[in-house]
Image (cartoon, rainbow, N blue to C red; front, side, top):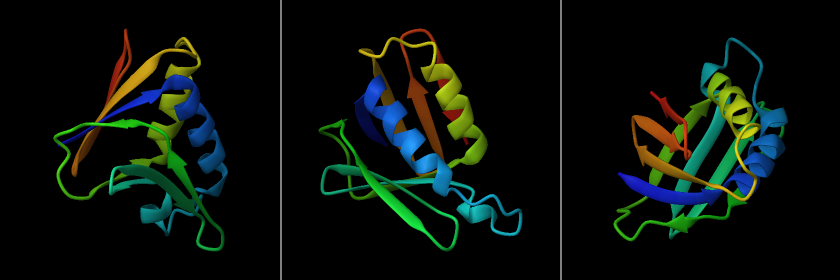
Length: 116
């Protein structure tokens, strides 16, 4: 499992920046979300509609026990849910993100979102 600590304001900015590039086609379900990937201590988000690719580094504190490269596809509906949750969180707050290949868990001070 990989652990990250991300400022709420950074998470909002990156999700809003990547969201328009997610595919809306029902035939390309694997493109309907944001791909999160960590390599060499850098967390990156990527989204594509099959024609345009957007990639952004997500500034975060990376856990010391992260092993190897980590990846997860955050589904479109989860992106929308996260943005709704973040609208009610303090901008200076922080999100604790845990990724375990099959699921991602976003912990805020009063809400937890687990995505399978």
